[in-house]
Length: 176
Image (cartoon, rainbow, N blue to C red; front, side):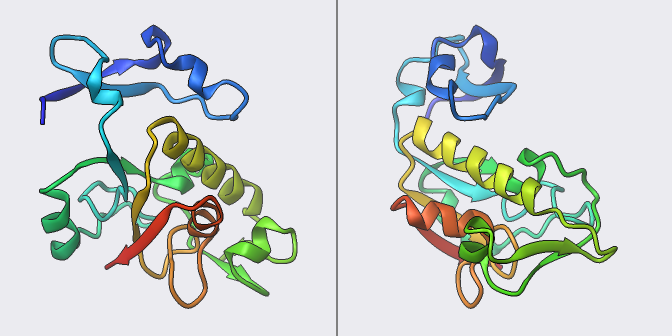
């Protein structure tokens, strides 16, 4: 795997891939020589950023999962936090899905409400859509997501992002 660094996206020839998606990322991974080439074409998996050890959880902490980290050693991966992509800060007030699951939130039949009683559904939906835009732009077929999250949970009550990714045929597996 070639070494990567971050480069401003506005310099990237792939910016057109994000038009009409509502997603406006600031950086993309590229090869150390500054090229975009095959780095953007290789198979990549999405991973919940908190599982990869980044401090993106609602409490400002990470939740690295040994099994997930071991799996990531054998593939290229892109850390992502749908709640941050939706515009929520870190740390942030914990939230949960009320009256349904992620599919219901996407359909307008349920809501994501934080502990202060604030409806943050639009932020969760925006983050899910932006995550999907990244997945489509990178031809991603696999997402490793944080269990129990109102965004990323897969089993039980699927989160908003997991539900949207699953609707679009992306294999979602949960850890942690």
